[in-house]
Image 1: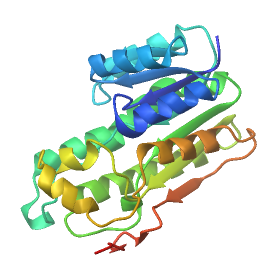
Image 2: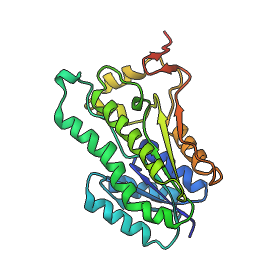
Image 3: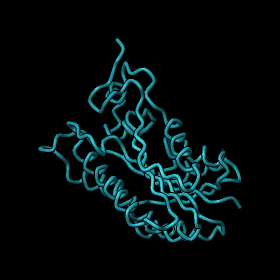
Length: 251
C-alpha cells in the first residue's frame, strides 16, 4: 500500500479537494468527517486509493477510532491534514453567542489537538511525517464580527507554532496554510445560518475568489517538498483581496 495521508473535514470543500489531489500524488488517502454518505461518495470517486472513516473531531472516542483504523491499515502514516473547522455567526463581541464560540474552539482548536495527538506517534514512526493544518488569515488579522472565529484561528496558530518547537529534532514537519477568501459550497453559508442571499453578498463583485482546488494545490505542494524543506506558514489570498479588510469588487 502507498503511504497514508489522513484528511479531516473531507466530506466537502477544501477537504474533499485535498483528498482527490493527494490521491493523484500517490497517497492512500483516509478521508475523515461526520457525514458518512458524503465520504462514501468521495471514496467511490477516488477509487482504491481511499478509505472512509466516519469521525467527529470534537469526540475523543471518535478520534481514537480514527487513529486505530489508520494504524491498522499497515502502511506508513506520513501525512496528516488538519482541515476540519468552521465558523458560526458574525455577531459583535458584545452580543456574542457563548455556545457558538465554544463550538468554534472545539472544532477548530481542540479538534486539531485531538487528531494531532492521536496520530503523532504514527507520523513520527514513519520517519518522514508531515502535519499540515489549515488555518485562516483570521489567525493574524482581527475583523469586526469575526471575534469567535478570529480567536479560534489565533489559537490554531499558537498550537501549530508550539508543536513545531516541541518536535524540533524529530522527523515530523509542521506546516500551516492560511487562506483568505475562498468560495466553497458550505463555509460561508453555514456561518450565516443558511442564508444564501447574505452568502452571495460576501463574494459579490469579487473577480475569481479562491476555490477549494487552489488550497488543495497549496497543501499538496507543501506536503510533497523534499522532507528537509519545511514551509512554516503559507498565506494565500485571491489577487482581489489585498488584506482582510481590503477587497476589490467590480461594479
